[in-house]
Image (cartoon, protein in one colour):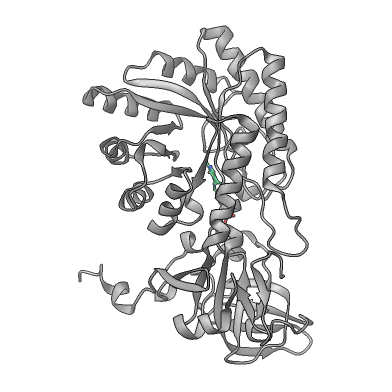
Length: 433
Ligand code: LLP
């Protein structure tokens, strides 16, 4: 086992992913390629669903935050595993619709929904809008009135929590671009407007404090603040808020230096504090919604590359260049995110070499990691970066006109193309002049 139980090695000394030989997968599907172990995603969905309903009650619902990995096959899995989904754009909504995802279980997020997004989502019958701010509340209300419907909404609230994570992914702090802060009084103002608004049913509140968080305390703090706010709303407005969405954000093990979180245990611990705070505030337990993205899909994935140039700069560093890079995984360039890499065709050899993993773009920041522990590499080796299931495919670009890699799903010893590789023709398909 390497990091997670579905990454292992076989008698040839090759990396296996969900029991399948990574070197064979690279041969069959080419590189770079994203490989996904479908069973891992399904197991994670089931674990979240069971823990949420055991801990919070039968009406609790985990939503898959589909920004983490978005293509029709993933929405089908989420639908079959009876999760809801969080969509943040017209494009995500369209993909969910194409996959036949039940619209009533979609929560439509985003801090700046366009008029067209709002209309499209209402055309689709999206169950719940998560309204970010007063401008958006007015726009959603106006469109609902125009259509003669009542749109169910949650309001995105900023509890003001520092989740001790990377600054670029902190979203719960007061000066965030997301939501309305309790501390500034804007949260109460938008609640009052939503209660009074025509065409709107205010069903609940939402908060999301950040991503890749390993401690439970920030979630407990956020729950405490949100529940006290529910009690204040009851007191000041006589209005009972029935639903509380606590967002996503639980961390994932990318390297052996990261802890493995037991998600079921984490959910039970969060539930215990929610119950305690509801008791203290004298309000009934709301229906609780969770919104994991990364922790459902990240560990399921790995990216396979072919090694090209290997360059040793004496006294400085070693470079291993691969046939992908920041266009298929921009996370090191953006956040210095740490990964585990290995040579898939010599996976049982110790990782005693140190190298900077370089992509093939004309940009020195195009790196997948620096000073990484890896086996010594040579041209033609298959290099695997593990735990790339979240925020890789969904954040991929065509920088330097590199076609995006395919997504290959493995399950029960079989591999299927879930998203085909882009071709050069695809790259010019939109060009008109
Ligand atoms: N709900 C909301 C409203 C969110 O904004 C997010 C993530 C999630 C749920 C899911 O969070 P998760 O469980 O995946 O941590 N591109 C960054 C991550 C950005 C997360 C944005 N929001 C990265 O690659 O690390």
